[in-house]
Image (cartoon, rainbow, N blue to C red; front, side):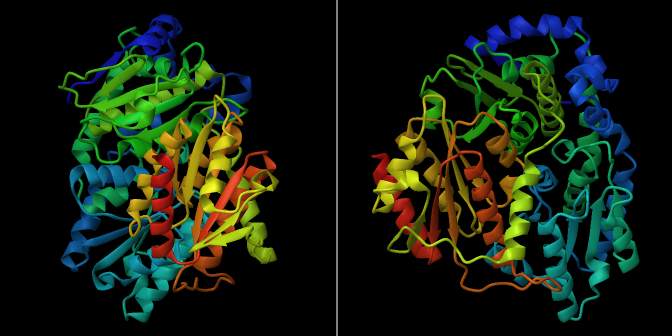
Amino acid sequence: MSALTFEATGAARTAVDAHVPRLAADAVASRIFAKDATLWGPDAEEESGKRLGWTEAATVSQPLVAEITALRDAFRSEGVDRIVLCGMGGSSLAPEVIAGTAGVPLVVLDSTDPEQVAAALAERLENTAIVVSSKSGSTVETDSQRRAFEAAFTAAGIDAASRIVVVTDPGSPLESASREAGYRAVFKADPTVGGRYSALTAFGLVPAGLAGVDLQALLDEAEEAAELLRDDSEDNIGLQLGAALGGTAPLRDKIVIVEDGSGIAGFADWAEQLIAESTGKIGRGVLPVVAGADAPEVTSGAEDVLVVRLVSADGEPSLGANEAAVGGSLATQMLVWEFATAVAGRLLGINPFDQPDVEAAKAAARGLLDAQPEPTPALFTEGAIEVRGGDWLEGASTVEEALKVLLSQLGPAGYLSVQAYLDRLAYPKLESVRDELAAAAGRPTTFGWGPRFLHSTGQFHKGGPAVGVFLQITADAEHDVEIPERPFTFGRLIAAQAAGDAQVLRDHGRPVLQLHLTDRAAGVAQLTGLISALAR
């Protein structure tokens, strides 16, 4: 196993010194690995009692390696070498990180955007197999994607069942339906592991392994890391990171995660969903912010910001004030952050294993799909951008003015969340607005691609501290995509998901500025230009 390192300065170091001795004395580390459900209080005991399987995932998952490898070899002998993952949240982000770090190709379809779906359907279908990942089997995004691929395979004269692999919880409706349909393989996941903690279970391993990752090396590394983390010692890096995340006083509740030479592709995005969905509830939590080393938040000096750097285990990070750095290989880092998030939950006084506010946006989207209401009229249109918002937006007549009014709603402890319901592969440039908006706002700013963020950071936005303001970006699609045997299309589905989430945010008293692009390319160019000007 590569070395595991941790360093901290300022408030992070103070938090470590204040909390780790007590955490060690209370045997928190060994109790987590013993699956002690009492660690997070009586209100959390029922849920935590059935959600601690991740502590032994590296061992429990060992039998999967041979099965996944055999299926991968069989696919390759048939000329099937393109793996598409249909999954959301933790079911998609972990395998994307694992495959990306190993340098093997894996197509991650974690969107209902019709153009992104169409692109996934159009590429090398004859060489494609899909992995459908859903714990419950009822996730609307993955069900819709499966239906679209199954129809496309059939239309191309391909035996669809032979190209579909399913990962789901035992006894789920998806398991029984998949077996009846005769799908190529059904992998039963550990039902005692929540989605965001499932990186080293079937949800992370099946798609990554089919894509070509060396799973045995990954699990061996994780088993060694588990031995270190179960130690009730003040040197336990998992306890130290957990104390830094959840134990600063006063609480620095904006955790800016910076990639700084770790060599792990996309790890900050995975950590973001883990922390946000685990800690953002009952008005508490810490907001993870994925940012670059030169981002405004890193040098802002804000009293509610803590910078955590992802570094190489054998490097010597240069830390500023109130910073921490964690170094280690992929599987080690994954287990350390899962463990530290559970520890932070204990310090914050919340249940790190439930997600009570995720369902609200799903319910609102279902209601809008059923009701099929007409879109809310735009307040005004400028170029390729339609502007919608609440009474707080009154008086704005240009997109720039609307953005300025939104930012004026930010309080001294607030944050801005940018949520883009577009094809993230076709319009990566849009993500560049994060730094510019952070500079203009002078406050921490997050960027999420919809609808995948609904399964992760969406929990924090509704259940965490009520200090966020929200910029939602949606767009028309030139061509829609049908969903077989469903009364709605992908275009209608993603529109309902965006509208439903905005409705729930407004119901929670959050200001939401909705910018709808009537022409994608022109709208993205117009918006990025306006935001660049705003930041100057």
